[in-house]
Length: 413
Image 1 (tube, rainbow, N blue to C red):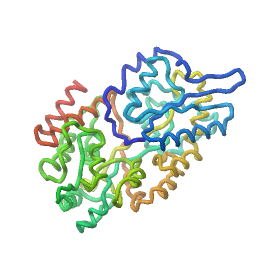
Image 2 (tube, rainbow, N blue to C red):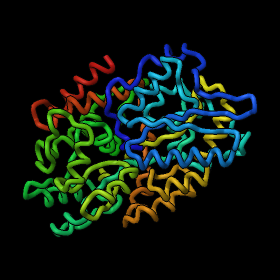
Image 3 (cartoon, rainbow, N blue to C red):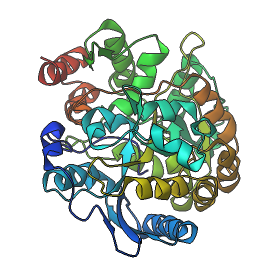
Image 4 (cartoon, helix red, strand yellow):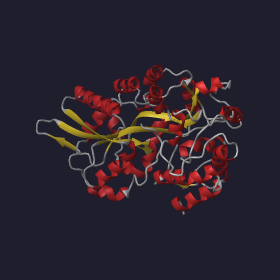
């Protein structure tokens, strides 16, 4: 999953209206000889990712020779736009990826998989409970997860060692984090980097006991949200240990700053680890986001696969999914570095491939207290607005409270 961050505008439309499209043409076609061809849509941002998904499609055909899965890819930033456009044009694929944060927006395009589990002796308890819960809506299991990840703190181990700063450890404190960030900020380099995207700062709200949803709507102006957001923006405006984001609010800017060696620490999910290892010239370390009064709570992201409501061959589609997220496929995904597997018994494979000291301890520690990261309808819009207006809080032209009030007025008037 290409960074769990949600940054694109307009990824959803009125999903209820989309469902009027009925059965989608070409979502699944059965021949007279019993053979079935199923379309599968999922995001992919590199040929390596496409190759992984095509391999899993081949595994389905090996297990069920009468089922052929045709994979369709699109970049992550465009994926949910394409999904809803397919639904609106009566052309929705039979199998589709679903990110937990998108359930409120597009969950109604997916069927409940629970009744199908018995037909393949499938046990949902074999998968990480936090992301299983995240892919549910009103008691319905809309997708079975293939990956998950708590947001953790990535750090540049070489920068820490060169500055003589003790390496972060899971559970490290707010005070330890700030001391390290100050010591690492020198020679036009910064100790930390973030922007207004919720993934970057919600861990600090949760760790001080805050909540960001009230009665099913964003609640961005309560005292705890303001306090947590201000703590992060102060790192740029007051402590001077983080740079201000560019006015354009460029997507993935914090990750780019960290990868280029301009900042020692940033927050992201474990799906970035193996790609980062291949593309940075320094040694990577992982730790938890800092603890406040002994408490560190982070958010998480994760994606699964489900059967769309317009699929004409839902039984075959579920059989295909049971292979795509099955034990053999999950171990393959872990070995390929595609994502941190939701299947519990495959996670050891991922740690071995990742080969980063401290990764298991950091992720296990984060998962012990992780928040499932529930969202509201149009959370994509909320996230994008926070990234856009957040620039003003990080550069000091607007107070963090005023920025949050501006966004709140637009998303939950």
